Length: 191
Image (cartoon, rainbow, N blue to C red):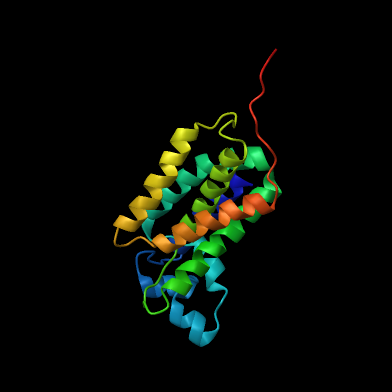
């Protein structure tokens, strides 16, 4: 399922590019479903809270998000199964976009990207580590926590990054993993 999400994001980007779209142009990205608070509130285009998760502003934006998703998503899917993974990815991504929307309604900024969903995956992995008291096979707990903290911090420091989508996705993924009762992933000890 994780590979499918990566491929869908790449395919959407390629289709827009092949059709002659400029993924760096905010107006064009609006026509493809990017999130824009006035369109959501004034036109009732709530679908944008979902569709914007599959759009990216340029190759670098796509590459960074898909690289992080490739590794973190595989870890989560392996431990939670494809259905739970998909629910966490999609619902967590929407949660990130909702928080971004609610905290940024006065801003007139076009936003897009899978990073809210990617942070939902990271939040769910952190839940697994917390739930299993740091004993999750195949996950370097310190590395995961450091990656989560540094990624969230980077989002707050970069001017062009939607840090509320990151934070909302992370919190959404953490809570979804708890609610979905993601299976235990405790290391086995050979005797």
